Image (cartoon, rainbow, N blue to C red; front, side, top):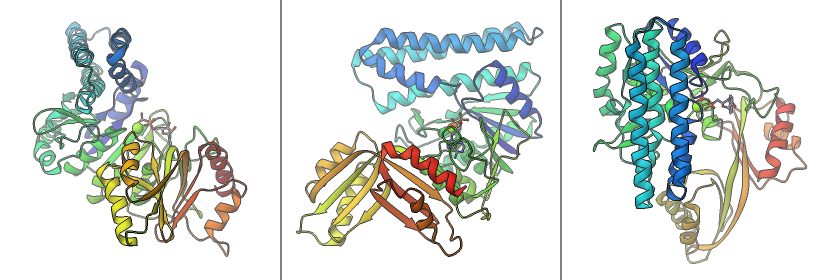
Length: 449
Ligand code: ADP
Ligand code: MG
């Protein structure tokens, strides 16, 4: 049994839906996870923000989402003139109901002038609620035994809105809903990204969370493989949209893939690998536009291909340097600094220390200002905004020249603000001013890959 996850681009229009159905048709026992249709999640978030001060715009976005989904269904069904008329009616009614839910939420935000993370999650989930139900209906029209499963009935999480943590034991209990359908020879279609807390409120698993849904389901169902189908042929040596000659990496370890995802390769949600690696289930990244291409296979094995496996980058970071006021000992000082970061849920990307100071690179986040205020009670704080991080993953010694020297000599004219290297993990992170990131990425890629 394979979990097949299809992202936003794959859910783009009636033609990609057909392509995706053809792929699903090639599997003996697939379980399908889908994202919202392309652009929908972004539009939903824009509608939510607009509903605070520009309600007309929020309504216009909602109408646009409705019209686009109606059009996808219309176009899809036009290719199946023999489809039962009831299907079109059910699909339209579903679209109208979900858009009515959306409009109610947007009106509430406008009236109360409050947009909580909880409301944002309820709004964001509408994209997957639409795509998964409609896609399951269209699958039936195309002759596949697809059947919709509401992710709220499977993916139970805590109430950490915006970035909820899955409750694995509950998901294991709920998995029988999927297992029974699979045993009956049906193909479950489930929306990614959203779930539900114990109180029945909608939650989401964070940006790109559909990958995570696929992996969670794969783990609880002990799938043979978890396949992430997207618009590129696997995980590349660098984002192919930025580096033209980037190429797909045939094989990565779970740890390497996690590092790449964590440090910015948006092809995969950083948590995707965790449930899969615990259950030793291989994850494959494949291209819907080139299904024959081998893509990337992620397993426990380390493959040997060159001195560096891949690189990635982030462009939206802040570096905070705290210099200790002398009243605290070194270990207490560091503990206090990290405690404040923990309190604000700020994940540290890069850290370097000196005898009396610590510098930390963090992805831009609206809680940084508050954290800085608190950090000031432990010493003087300097911040540098507009920073980026280049991360090299799977670095290994190559001949006599150290890999770090090799990489740094490629960009010797670009000032690096922080550098961290782990020999055992083969990870090198370089923080520099954002404007230097893309040129440096291109130069390093050209020299090393
Ligand atoms: P989906 O909608 O299928 O989830 P995403 O847009 O989330 O697709 O992920 C695919 C995109 O990730 C690619 O189009 C590519 O631009 C980007 N990307 C960034 N880094 C990498 C990388 N190292 N390898 C492959 N794709 C990458
Ligand atoms: Mg994605």
